[in-house]
Amino acid sequence: DTAVSQTPKYLVTQMGNDKSIKCEQNLGHDTMYWYKQDSKKFLKIMFSYNNKELIINETVPNRFSPKSPDKAHLNLHINSLELGDSAVYFCASSHGAHFAARYGYTFGSGTRLTVV
Amino acid sequence: QQQVKQSPQSLIVQKGGISIINCAYENTAFDYFPWYQQFPGKGPALLIAIRPDVSEKKEGRFTISFNKSAKQFSLHIMDSQPGDSATYFCAATADYKLSFGAGTTVTVRA
Image: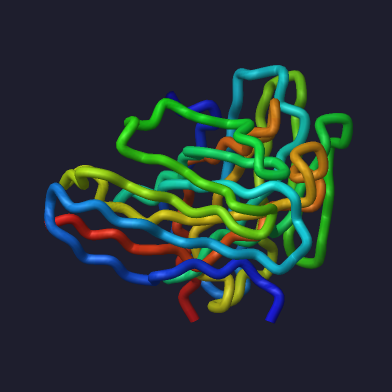
């Protein structure tokens, strides 16, 4: 199946832990994104990589660090997890930043992170 | 700071009715205006999009109306069906970023 796949789908962890979310796309896209969706369903961009280069880095705590080993993968590592980090994290990809608007972003199904 | 303001937060419509969702923006640098549809447990998916030099775009039962001077755009869902029940997000793009509205949860009653 051609898609954007994220793992894990659910992640429950204690405060202070470090966790990673992985994302892979097989669509041949060269731009990938991380979005955070809060409990009110608001979607906010966190990071974007184009050809492994960081092009968007929104005001996100330093505890969040993205890594893109190649164009098809974008991982998100979170250190010292806090209660407020609980949210659904979506990975997305698109055909280049310039074409993203016209052809749309393809989103993964999300990772529901719960910090207890 | 939300760059795209969306209303209403939720709406309920009878099967066969018309759903209307409104959005407004301030940033004149926005150069494309897509709408995304999200079902529970899924990621958003592109539904329809419009350029700012076009006043209306129709795809099947979905129509975007765009008013550049008022900096407003809206989504009309004609002949709403239960399968249309989802959360709809308007969005706008500028400088490689896709900025979303707060979302509207649409419930279509059979």
